[in-house]
Image (cartoon, rainbow, N blue to C red; front, top):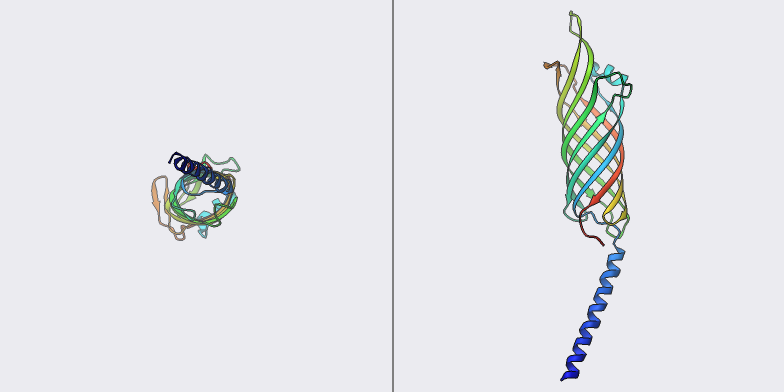
Length: 220
């Protein structure tokens, strides 16, 4: 009887060692994990454009700028993530403006390609954002009136689509390369707080960014 119990315990111990070894090997094979909560920080550089004749002069003077994007979200599995984000873009490259910026806050969905055995994971994402632009100071001449100067503010909804890839140095830590295109077709425009009704109050923006992403999931 004692011998049978001893043999049974020995078999259990051997099985435990084998299972632990298998799990360790599997863990070592995992190169990336996009499930669970994450945060990311990106630096980006881009250019904005418009079909508005009124905005073209402003755009042509300083069309390019740089900025930062902070986002956080949750990966439901190895394919789909939802995220919230805040981005700031400064177009005051010449230094001639008091303020010349584009701010967005919004939410998005990201679809990831590849699997946990891959260090490099391409992705596509879409976003909907509350967008605001501020340009101070600009000059504006009313029809038949004097030229005035002041602050121009624009607010609206933008849609953004993009994609890129992540390279995972660890299964929970990655470097990111990201390109995005934003478009807002109908902004509300205010000059010194007075609403302006002009046609073609649209703005588009294309930017490319690099950054890092950190996942608060498993530590393989």
